[in-house]
Image 1 (spheres, rainbow, N blue to C red):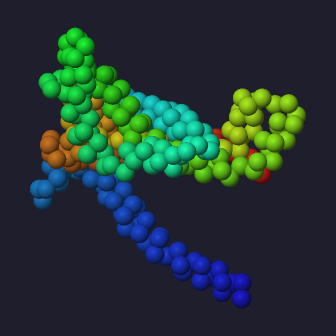
Image 2: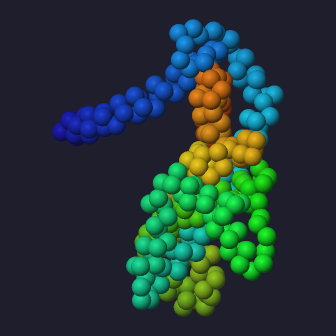
Image 3: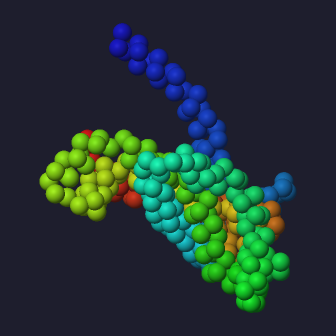
Length: 290
């Protein structure tokens, strides 16, 4: 009977495995295949060039600049999203009037698509008639070119992405906080612990499952950042705010370098895998049972 039950459960997972195979394994395998060819993306002719595309990565300044930006988007957004999200969760976890309304307001930005958010922020940070510069003009300050440099653009994009995804982190941490048994905090208070000690010695260790989920999800999302960049800076100035995801798109559709684009895509996959797996293992090792 137990054996039959296991086979039934296994059969129920078959559709999920098929979806993973069709939409993840097959495209990944095809990307690896294409990366060994010189191809414009639509021609019937594909020239096999072996590892030449991968070797070209080492001398590609745009690739390394995009990789640097990608790490800023990934780690910068993850840090800010988790700090803001945890702070917001601690605030809305308290009892006060209008708490549910505040939760809604903090969560609403994540409901807007990245493309639309980038377009909105473009009209805020734009040099000519941007909302921010118009406000500064009212107090006698001249227009500021907020995205004049690549680094400035990258930092602004990171801040916007962090603010938009903060609500997602807030929900994860709010669920984690509400799942912590009150008896642990009450016991710590009886032992004379301060609120600060309770937070770092009781709440944080018990929040580790929530921290793991939030950090890994935000990190992978930040490393794959694409949509906000498209509408806010379009990769400018001079492709200095590109992420690897956007660089892959430009290589394929603009530069017609499908093979090289696939090689960059494999590089991004390896970067995400190499970063996310050890961090996930480390955070999992810090989780405690209660």
